[in-house]
Length: 447
Image (cartoon, rainbow, N blue to C red; front, side):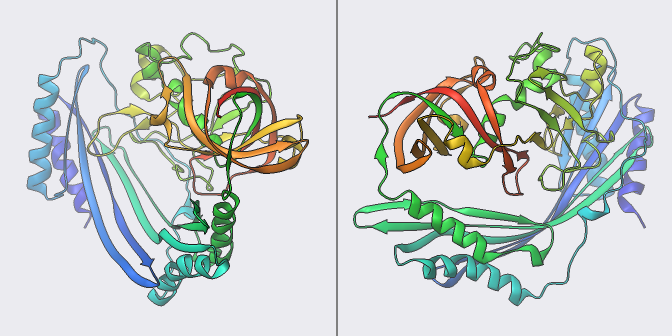
């Protein structure tokens, strides 16, 4: 018996009596996390979660409520809370909010292929993520962070228009962050993995790369202040996309918070910059056959040769702003309706990383942003001033690691100053799929 559907039908019947429309988003899953420390099993955690979020629509007003108890009584009580919230919260809007009507969605059976893997094998992966780092080089004295994760997640959306969509996916992920020491100098760096098949996990490759990154940072010097050409590493360019991804939201545009407002159809980036939103890209973590109100997913061109082509919309803002409906509704059971991208994919170019690093007499290979966006990005202006680390190249030769510098600029100017794009993508496991990117000039404050 499908108790979720049965219970929702009772909610939908009540909503009709109340003159309301209703949507229920149910998410949940199972997760296993294993970690070793100092060659001993330190953590072993297995969890199961489920949560339902109700959205009730009364004309132009919406109310939300959520519960972790999916019994009939609890769901009806949660519906009542959401209904009261819809009556209380007055938006001042007059145009009624619509629900997505039932439509066919793309089948994605490749997302959910559960495997029977012995627990001993999972424990061994977790153990090797620490052990192989320690065995790789005597300068690796500790692995402060490492772990293996197995995840199964599901999402289901039902509404009073008759929509009922569901999908599941399973995957494995892990990470290792070795600490390397040379005398008084110590540096930590790391690597991770994302795999949809257990046999695709390569602990030797992951740990080898983690150790290589940590050792490469030893002996770092300070960079002289000045303007330099910079290659933003394929693993770091996602931070640039994080700076701009809210600007694509039709809601942000409508509220005057997006720097892309009024710029549709305009060339505002380098013609080397091409960007799509692709919810079907299985290398990315934001893959999905439908959005968070049940609309079928679709690819959306965001930049074509530097020209801004589309905003991202949910059904409400597509109707409100007379925009194409791109199916980018985003919310969790405990949050309100928003708009967000899925997998953002930057088109590759034809240059190797080495060719990009040799493009100027002096080039900074930016290999790490220290502290993330909160360390120095102002969304209202696009200005950034962010601590970073990397390597100095002169005439294509690596002159060593550099640190304790701040890279400053404006993200829109950075997009305009893209000179070339690499031909290789970052590793799977990110919703931002990026190559290496050469920027003509940025300001660096160092020694």
